[in-house]
Length: 619
Figure 1 (tube, one colour):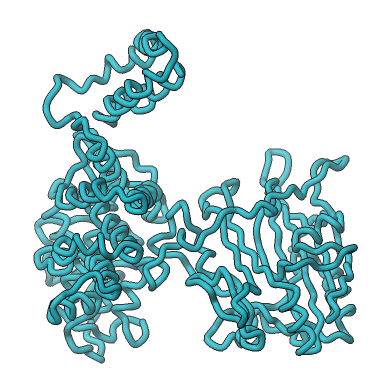
Figure 2: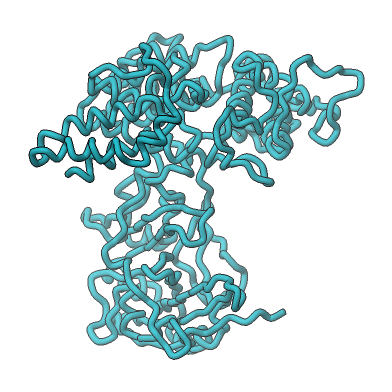
């Protein structure tokens, strides 16, 4: 217990947190009575004689003054800490804070939520953040509105109490913000649609049309030059204040916004400079960090994972400028978008799903049977296994006992020792099934594949154009994550789960049981399909956690499909390992593959392919 007390005191004894030390000292005081007699005094003595205490003498906060320390109130402390984190430069931290607010709501702690909402109009996080750091209050406001919009789906009666705040965000005239208005409207609409809020007809119309242009569409091009590469006309002088934008951000985000309304990129740039000047006239370019570390800056532009202070200002200025342009100008044909260029543009910056759910709502826990080890020791080091029984078990298949209640017919995930597991399936004519199976295992492993459908409106497109005698029956949709991409509790693949093609789904009379398609039920109401998604998206780390995706089909559904369509099933297993570059060797891929043939009677036959086969470049 003494060690715990010391560590808690140390955690926030840093110069970037004026209050956290006192918060954790209070916590240590709270748990001290639970320790053995004398342990608290011992912990404090050890702390005061440690290196931490000597360092602390050099980074004092100065004389005590009001406002640097929180009130002795749990709800205020909890709300203050959440308000500080929801305005973090790190997207991951903002999403964690948003989840904390949802949990407070779930457990009925609306007193804490009320205090967080009450902080909306403030521009600082005192006393929970050092005064020398600028607080990202625009981030805090936006993510609070994102959270309220999501909470309105689960708790419309409670969120309806914030009607005035939400309406103010929609009605804002001086500095309207497209995304803040979008999520405020989503929250109100959810409350109205669930009969927990009544708005007069005029107000309701404004709320429902918050994302739309109120001007008639101008179906012609009006922009004459003024693109990113053309720059400002020589006849137009630069403004007295200039906020310099990051190159790629200006080239893509800003110029694309200008095209929507037929405005030059330089015109939008000038608008954004004026907006930033009102917020913080000391900032002159997006690379200024406001006294913080610049971990997110790189040669490829800004990243939504981390915003420096100037980047955050430029990012929000874009959406304030967009809202002003929407009010003052009609949408034109200068963009290369479809029938609704404005909606297309805004759609890039909102949540991945249109129904208001977050990716985390569809992300499950890692299945117990997904954590397997697929490397074994050989004379020359580790190698991918070729054991038939272990490979078949990955798809819930037993060569001796046959199929169980269900099997995996599509999937991609990683073993606990870093081997990528790929399982895919296709329907084939019975007379050619063995021929196709043998052909697959003799292909170069890295090139072995079976076709699936892309997930278009009619499920009628191959991922590739050859192998025409194979009948794909699985749809593998594609799509990108958007604003909630960096939610640490969600994965982008949660929204693109594989499913049965429409023809087979209708034949089996399957219906989706939930918004994400996690379960598919038959006409009796029992599940026939399961689509699992789990893990973490860590695209910036080779050795980081990975997402996982699997589609499981019951044996009864499989038998019904094979019998009706007179087909057999080929199940392709591909295990892939990547060994990174070392000072001794360059990186390389190696594979083990195998194919299972399942006939209409659900008999199983295994075709062993190459094991731990090193991929060699053809070049």
